[in-house]
Length: 614
Ligand code: X8Z
Ligand code: ZN
Image (cartoon, rainbow, N blue to C red; front, top):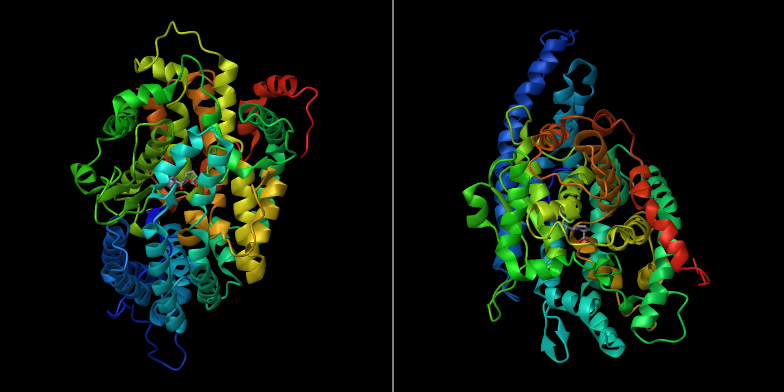
C-alpha cells in the first residue's frame, strides 16, 4: 500500500485525477495474425508506462498529502474549507490511480510478468494494489468514501473532551490516567476519554460499507483481506499469524495480568482482587501500555525528561539517529512539522495522534506530534523519527517512487520503536550522561517496566484490534453488536472489563484513532513488535556483542549500516528475504519471548498463592 503517511489519517485515500492518465500505445496489429511482442517490447512498454504513471502519481500524491496535512494540522470545527479541499485532492488522485485505462494497462502488462524485470513487476503490482482502493468502475462509491473519510477525520480530531466540566486534551487525559490515584476520579477520566465514541458510529458504519464496496470492485472480498494482501497473506493467514503470536506471548501476559490485578488492587485499596482488570485501573485509555505502573529507582526517565523539555526530546532523538550515520534532518522538517501541542486558547485544533509524513515522496518529510517532556513522548518521538529516516533512506535513485514504502508496513513501524527501546536502556542513558554510571539500579524492575510497556500490547493489537476489525469488515459484524464484541474481545484477550456495562449506545472501539483513519491494519504494530525484538536481538548479540537488556547503540556506524541495508531498498525487496538475510531467522516471536524470559521467575515468585484467571 502506498502510504500518505505512516500511521497518518486517511492513509488509504489514493489519488485520482481529472487529467488524462498516461497510457501506452498497445502493440499495433498490422496484419491479421499479429506476432506477439518480443520480451524486450514488453519491458519497453512497461518502462514507458511507469515513467508517465509515476510522474502523474507523484504530482497528485503530493497535492493530496498537502491537503491532508492542512486538514490534520488546522482543524476549525464547523469550517468545511479543509474537508472540501482534501476531498477534491483525494478525488483527483483516486480518478487517476483507479482509472479504467490504468487498470487495463496494468493488468495487460502484468499478464506478461515473466518477461518484465522484477522491479517493473513490483511497481506495476503496487500500482494495481493502489488502484483497488479507488477503482473508477465504482467512481461514485470512491467519491462518497473520500468525503466520508474527510468528515470522520474532522469529527475525530475536532472533538472537545470534557473532564470535571472543563475541556481537556488527550495529552491531559493520558497524564491523568497515568497519575490519578483516586478510583472514582479514575473512572470519570476513563469515561471522559470514551465520550467521543458514539459521535463516530454512523460515520464508521458508513465507512465500513464504502471501504468494502471499493475493494470488491477489483475482486477483493472485503477491506480486511485487501489490507492483509499487502503482506502477501490471505485474511485467514494473517489471522492465523496474529493468533499464533498471541498464543506464544500468553504465558508471559498471564503472569503480568495476575501481577497487575493484585498490585493495582493494593494501590487503589480494594480488598477483593477482581478476576478481570477494570479498564479504568490501567494507565492507558485502552490498556495497551502499562509501563508507567513502575518507576525504576535511579532510572526515572520522566524526571530526567521533565527537566530537559519537549524540544530537547526531538533533538535528542535526531542526535541518536545521526550518531549511527543517518543525516541531519532537512531544515524543512523543522520549518514545516507540527511538533508540539497548540498553546491553550488557539482558535483551531490539530490531530492529537502522532504521525510521520512523506509529502512528496522526496525530501519533504514532516511529523505531526504533540510532544511533551515525558517517557511516552520520548518513545513516540523515536518512533516517528524512525518513519522519517525510513522515508529519507529509500528516497534514492535506485528506488522508484512507487516503491518508497517499508519492506512491509510492519517494518516501517518497527525501526523507530526499536530505537525507542534502545534509548531507554541504562548503558545508553549513562553514555548520554543522563544517569550516573555509579547509580545502582534494579535490573529486574527495569525488565518489569519494559515488559509492562511491550507485552500487554500484543493481546491488544493482535487480539482485540485485529479480531474486531476482522469481524467488522470481513464477517459483517451486526451494527447492534459492535460494542458487545469489543468488550468480549477485551475480556478474552486482555482479561480486561469496563468499570460499568457499556451498551451499544457507546462505541468504544472508535475511540482508537486507527479504527477510523488507519483501518484494518493494526496488526502492523503487533508484527512490528515481533520484528523489532528480532532486529534488536541481532544488533545486540551479533553486532555490538552486548546483552540485549543492556545495550548502547549510540555512535555505532555498524548498527546504522545494518539498519540502512534494511531501509534503503524500500519495498523493492521481499520482506521475508530481508528478514532472513539480515537476522538469519523467519518472522518469529522467539526473540521477544527470550528477552522477557528472565522475568518469568520473578513474576511466578510474586504471583505465588495468587489466583490466575486467564
Ligand atoms: O499509532 C502509533 C504511532 C504512530 S504510527 C504513534 N502507534 C500505535 C498506537 O499509538 O496505538 C505506535 C505504537 C502503537
Ligand atoms: Zn508509526
